[in-house]
Every structure is written in C-alpha cells, then in structure tokens.
Image (cartoon, rainbow, N blue to C red; front, top):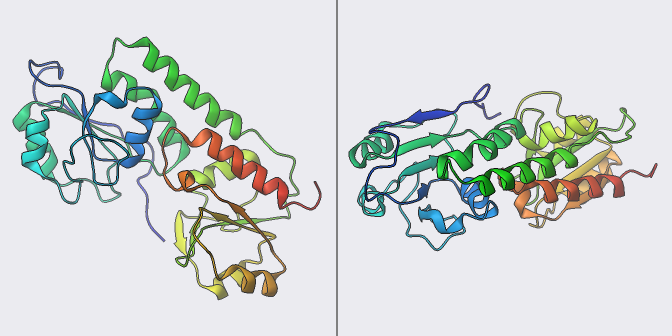
Length: 266
C-alpha cells in the first residue's frame, strides 16, 4: 500500500518578490499531469520547461528526481509547478528556484479534491490577470463534477479497479479514481487505502462483482479472475485515466459508460 499526503497541500515558495521580475517568462512544469492541465487551459505556449514525459515542445529541464539545474536556470521561468511525492521534495529545486527568483507552486494529486484544487489555482499561478484561464479552469472542474454525479447502483455489487497490464495495481478509496467511485455511489472492492498491488489470490478473496481495467495495456490475468470469481470484466480503454490532470472529466465519463456496460441490471 502506498501512502498519500493527507489533506490538501499547496506549497508556495517565493524567493524574490511576486515572481514578476524582469526577464522571467512562463512556467516550468515538473509534472506531466500539470502540463496536460496547462495545455487544456489553452496556455501551452507558456510552458518554458518540462519533464521528459510531458506532452510539450518546451525544453526538458529534468524532473523532481533528476533535475537539470542548468537547464532550469536557462529557461528562467517565473514559476515552477510540481506534483510532490508523498515523502516531500528535497532542497535541490527550492535552491535553484531561489537562485533565479522563481516561485514554486506544488500540488499533490492523489485525490480528485487535489486535482480540483490544482485546476482552480493554476490560472493565478500562470497569469493572475487572465480571466479566460480562470473561466476555462471552471469548465474543466465542472466536467469532472458532472462525471461524479451519483449513479443508480446495487450496493452489493462491488467494483475492483485495476490498472491494465501485468502490474495489477488497484485503485483504493483514497485515490482519485477511488474518490470518483465513491462520489458515484459505487462501492469499491478495496475497503480502504490508496494504491495496492494485488496478486490473483488477493483478487479472488475480494470477490468483486466487476473488475474494471483502467488503460489500454493487455491484461492477461483477467480471464482467470473471471473464471474463479464470476466477476464481469470490463475495460476503460483510456490511458488519460492514469494521469490525474484537469482533463479527467471526459475520461471519467468513459468509466461511467464502462460501469454501465458491466452492470447486467442496466
């Protein structure tokens, strides 16, 4: 079981003034999820630095685990946006940010509440005066809220959500997809916790009514789980669900559709 940061953490480290110093430009994003959100806000051209995994043409400045300090200094962002790990950030990033006078804004993205907070606060971090960014952020949040509307569901029918592929990483109630499931009124086969790697015997013991695979990778274990538990196997073939970004709204609607397909009462 992987621990998560409790509550909502919003870290603001301001090294010099309000971040509007002469010569700085845009944002460096050390989170693929936050980069996706910036692009969805229509502000992709403000990204001046990114991780190797971000969908952006901006120069790579490394990651929280492998920061390229020289590249970050060369990018000279006004703000650095990050998704901190559960154990927190080391001092390397804050030292470099202080050196160039950049703000650091950080949001953990374990739950949907975290994601909503990031989306709501990101426009002000990028450009406090841009009302279009704020309006677009409200649209993204509204899309997530619509997807989380309660569903008519038999509470005896539990759902086990597992990342597609061989890893069998399941989404517990304390994850963003677990929070989505709870908002919809659908019981999670995992009674508590965040992410948990399950073996086949774990799955059999949970006796889920539905096993929902998340993502597009092949999942060779599903046939055996179905045979041994009688569970219906359904898939949400959308890798965007594996990234807790502000673009989750349409993807969560696909999960709703997959659950409806997997419920024989419908």
